Length: 175
Image (tube, rainbow, N blue to C red; front, side, top):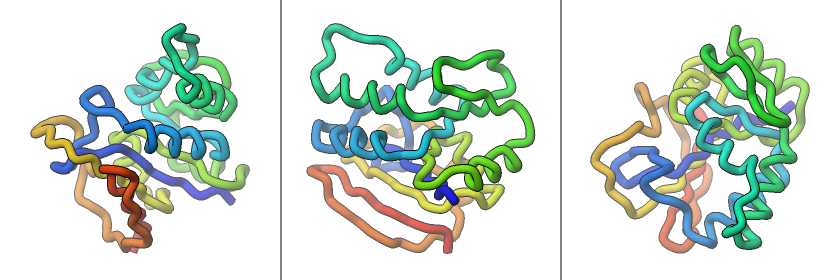
């Protein structure tokens, strides 16, 4: 059975904004490694549209960007959206019955399935389907944006913390 893991970069004041700050080189290499062994990713519409960047080749990319793109393209993706009519390569659209669709994914796969996007994470938290939260805390204050936890924070238990250069990775499970 797969484990559903919600991992996102977050500012010191609790916001997720993938256009306002990016992981440093060390953290990006960690994300490459994770993408290489993940069983897949579940995206909300907005995050999926941001991540579609990795579907295309860009001549300015270095080796790390090429490695991440290859890993991202290889893994299956499930996109939760009521408005999209189609999705790109190696992706499946989930339009209805989110809870049963995610429960089925967890049963059919082994390893970790990443959850990306604060809105989707909120919905899956409400359904009690997220098994682990990974907060990559960056030394940035945004003052606005989408909060990591879109609703009340669920009861959590800290399992691990790790410093990755100037970022702190906090790993929690539901309490």
